[in-house]
Length: 308
Image 1 (spheres, rainbow, N blue to C red):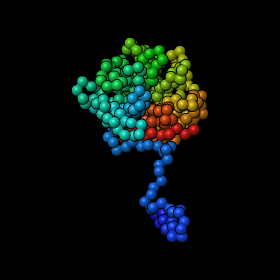
Image 2: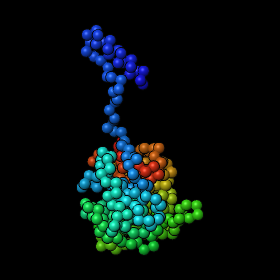
Image 3: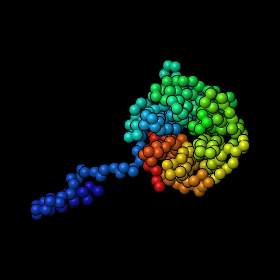
């Protein structure tokens, strides 16, 4: 590239000497980045980022940081605030290490009204959306791995328990796998609870029904009458995040595929972007048409333009 630039520069000098106005840019000139290029937010202090959520009112991205083990009650988890340009506004906006704040291993997040909900192992924690001040907590009896959240239209949130615990060879089923509706008054209702569920993870509401993807399999299912109805199988498993795109398609992140798949609820799903190790709980910025992808193992977040 340096040789080509130098030749172009010399040619420009020769043309100028002949009275021509055209001349090449200096060798140091660099092409402007494409506006469609992904923005990588890395090396900023993220620690096991699990979920990203667009707070539309503040127009900021919230990043949940487990900061260690997803199962450890160490009170060192934190939430970050990041600008749409990829600048960290507050690395530890809500910090488990701060006085009066409890936050062990924060995972999925959801905002309803002025309340920010955060899934934290066996407890659903609530914070003030604007200030980050703690508002309360809701214990989910028997839960072991509360994971993702979605706002429920009737109030409160939908919540998954992936049903995992520490085992000799890593994670193993704990028997607590479930999908809950935590009502606005704090009442916890089990919509589906079955020890054989293959790790319910990402959850969303499509306007008519609750949708769930599974970490222990490659399926997308809905809950009907207290039972699981599989809607489609994705190309690979280890499914984590589930968000609806502006055009009505759905995006699902896959650890096994190291990819984000896109498609209709009934399938089929195809790769939108690949080469993403451990893509966790996706966020969506509909106005800018970008996916917000936390890279769990790499301690970074990718702001990825949506491919059509």
